[in-house]
Image (cartoon, rainbow, N blue to C red; front, top):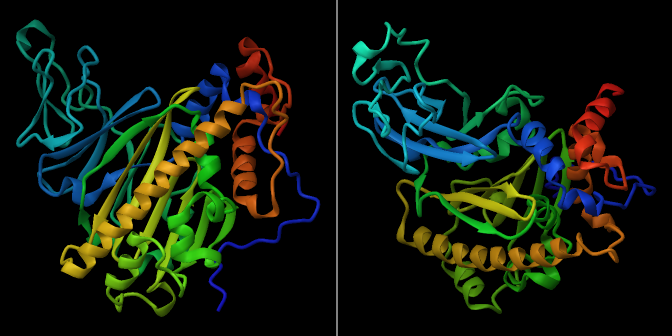
Length: 399
């Protein structure tokens, strides 16, 4: 049975070159990426189960912006800029927690209701009357899809998340992601590479056989990638019937219970749904996770993600989740090393650019999406850093 959803024909004469090397160490380009690729595209902040009770909140600091997601007393989840309207302090300092009845700025004590409206300024007689809505927290665009909380800092080119993910919605819906609960919490770490090097490694499975012994043991040649189509990609694999040479894989396949809650073709599958520009939703029979990356500088990237489990998880599912986590952790460590080696070459005069295999169309189509946002990436030679923004605007205006 063919389980491809997003497959498209790749022409024989397609351009095998990736992005130019200068694109991985240009400060001016990074500023354009922040504005045109990150701030105006949907980003995953977390899951509804991360903010289960009134007053529960989580924060996310990325690309020069600070987001705050909080559940109100009315049960609604809202998102705001984590910026006090008085002096710009963080209203909430921790990554996650509960603020009970109100949000209190730690700088001067301005108080905000859970719906973002201003409850009152400290020493209010020192100010004129303040409109509670006008001086409330500035809201962010928010959409909840399959339990995931998406936010957007600016209006951008993407449609709603539901429209964007429509091609894979039916398949992903079988996992009942919205009903799951956190396992290990939201994690983050940094890696010393450009964010695109992280995505370049993750967007193709050509390297699995050589670089990922555990994954190769688990699913071997059953793995295939599908290219980015309108901002969404998909990769699919099922367990290799001969899996078991490695301890984690052998016990995972042995202990994982039959996933009768899933259709037959998904019961022994690991599926990865890529979302442009920087996110993946990864599903396994016993758990679902997301992971993403954000640039901190041209040479440092923030990795962030979380794993969610079944609310009524059995002991067998818990064991399988732990073992799949071990396999994933090993794979991530290997990918980090690969991204470091690849990223290092971008500064070498000897590096002449990528030359991509037919199997690496996930990389190519992701780069195509980036070039559509930032046409300056079509230039082989690096433009002057001072002219980068104006040149990109001029190229955009030409269509």
